[in-house]
Amino acid sequence: MEGGAVNMKKAFTLVELLVVMAIIGVLASLAVGSFRTAQMRGRDAQRKSDLKQISHALELFYSDYHKYPNVDEIDLISGTDEFSDSKGTIYFKILPKDPSSNFNYVYQVVAGSLNQKYQLFAKLENSQDRNLDLTITNSGCGGTGNCNFSVTSANTNASE
Image (cartoon, rainbow, N blue to C red; front, side):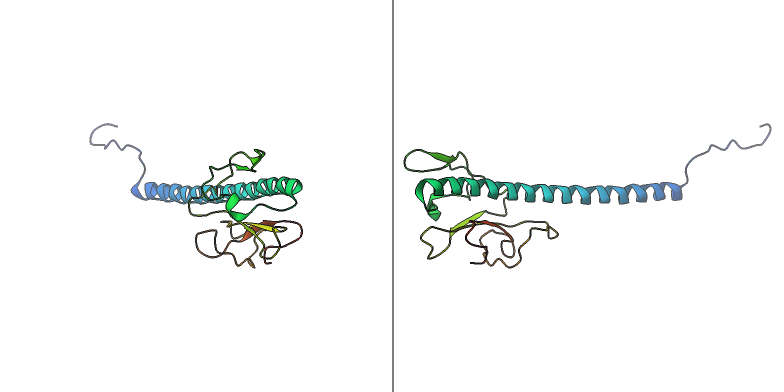
């Protein structure tokens, strides 16, 4: 261009930059939400697996002694103790602890059952989980509200 012609460079306008930044922001918030949901579901899957494994150990104890252990023999809060008997049989090397520091697992023997029935409780975080049991009245799992997931001996249920 000769003479007085102005040399214009092509660039993004401010509006175009703002639109792109808004789109990136929306996509980032969706990704963070999905990530949190995946973490929550992962912790819930861990809780279910832990209670099932503890249940298997309790059944092994029952097959040896024809009763379930007393509540004071199983420490599910610290997550560091082993579950063993006085003869040295180890039923669980290190009892699992809830994956969230806000929640606890709860073990109880059904009152009046002479240690013939047990209940294990946990609190699931995902309110859409198909295994939720909102009829449970045990509030020992921590957080707000009651425990909402249980594994029990075959001869009882969570609300007994």
